[in-house]
Length: 260
Image 1 (cartoon, rainbow, N blue to C red):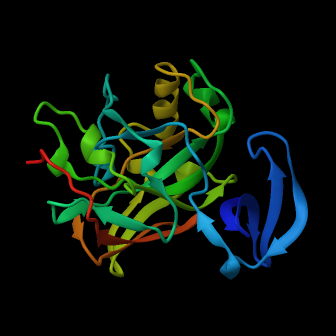
Image 2: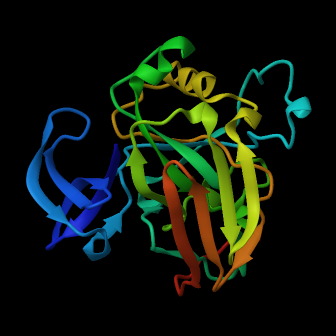
């Protein structure tokens, strides 16, 4: 099932995306909900980010270029980072390049959405706690990374976490490829089998560090090929079984000081 979140007549609603249109629903998508009986055309809907996450957690440097490059052992301490919920935007939203820099990096990723509270969950049970999957773009301004290794500022600007276009609840994450196109040219295309820390191990590890709540979002890493892009560039992050997340880059007038 493909769930979308949309603005309809001034009200934010969820709906199931089908061929004939969006079937609106009411209630808690992570619990009890039902169809309202109303259907609206997809072209008439303003799609928003499919979730409002409490936490957005990313993992760094999580792909290799070919299977033979996969390590024999998983890293003892994977590189995780937080992104604020205020950085989340939806499909079609503009990505704002902070003032004083000319470019940012795109990173197309599979995003995992938690469906029920999980704590200390073993990897064999992880899929029972996942509600669905969407496409994410972990936009990054490495110019703001701290020299001691802190990534937070470079990951946290408003608009730096586009998500969408929908939330797919029926997906085998081991049988997909993560792709990206910049101005129509393919830049990323990798199966999830090339993840260094596989999805189940990743989510299990996080559940043993912190309690994960319904709606929390985990960005599972970006394939090789991410690079800098600038004003006017069109970014399309694609997972065929979910859809394409499209955004364009613009300049912002918001002043930022202290960057290098």
